[in-house]
Length: 485
Image (cartoon, rainbow, N blue to C red; front, side, top):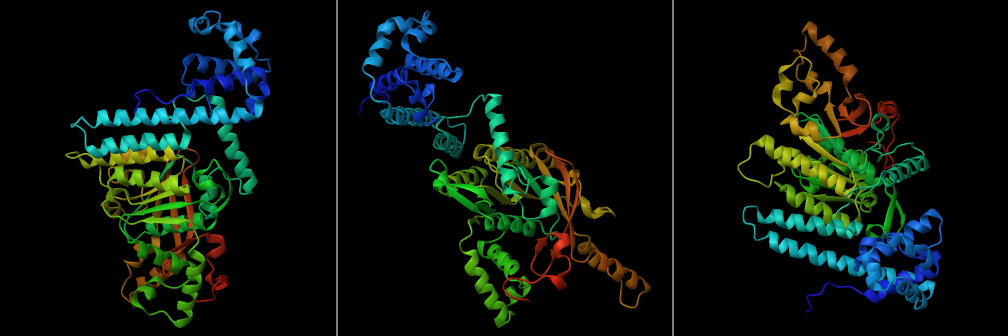
């Protein structure tokens, strides 16, 4: 095998000659081709100069463009104006420009693959770092190469970022919901958050039994159920998401079957407790089967591996993104992820985990919804509504998160303080319970993109379903598509 890196100078000469002969051919080549994809540095500068001239509305031909290279030693070395004229004379027809562009781009990617693998092989000799760290570093670079055609995004002009922001706003307007992010399916929560935003790390925290897993499951299901895509050859799996999304759910605590049971319970409107005990009626079982048939096609993917190291979690997310494309990642929950290093304190481990998740969200350009436990100090207060300081190892979580939300249900605590029947206080307790039964709160304690505050939601404890309060609190008027309970 030759040690020479893959390249094709003849293809580079043919494309540049074609562009100098007919500037309109620039519109025929893929936008992903950039100057740095050319192997010969002088060709890189030539291609860039042609693009800049055409972008200004000027004519890019040998006589006009040679002034750009008056002080360029390579221009003289290659033959000066005569070299440019020769490229034009031998230029292929304009329709061939795209073929040469693809050849140049393909060879550039091959060179990057060789460089990445060589660097990975050299880095693997460093025994001071864990082997998996080297594997993940190489895989991350290769993944970025697959997704973007470059090893890293590097410095981005503000104009490019502005174009992306305007495209997101336009897409949100066309959806009709006026959201710039991904809809959770919960109207009031969407209004407060503007949806879940790409590249954001969102934390959903709560004490045990508050319903954080249920809420995350509801959101994941709502997003997957709303999924709609159109053909797009440049997108993963050849499809571009226009509504809803494809969801990857890392369930480190529950099995895939337990998670699926929660969703079926919600959709079929059958008590999860009855399902677990085998006490469902024939009618309820029929509703579950009908619901299951509908649910089979939703793009919700579950990884129920327990004690998953953060490096493997990120690697699996990247692989799934390559295979199907992803629009949302859910992690249940932070404290069950294993940090890569050994001998660190738990605060440092959580810092590593949240930093990696934030980096993954930016790399894949998707929101990540990560669940977190709260410390027991909540239980020692009269008002048990959580706050940022209640987060376990709160420093790094609060710092890395773009949004921190807490799930709180007053009914959970009130139910555990029931006076004995016949006690005069029981009547007061019953009245208080009636006011909070079926209610939940999502307390937004931090939000980079908007205000903090509290969002009231409906909660059905039998099916662990969170819903839009105004529409679904009155269960007497709620009919399910698979029949009444």
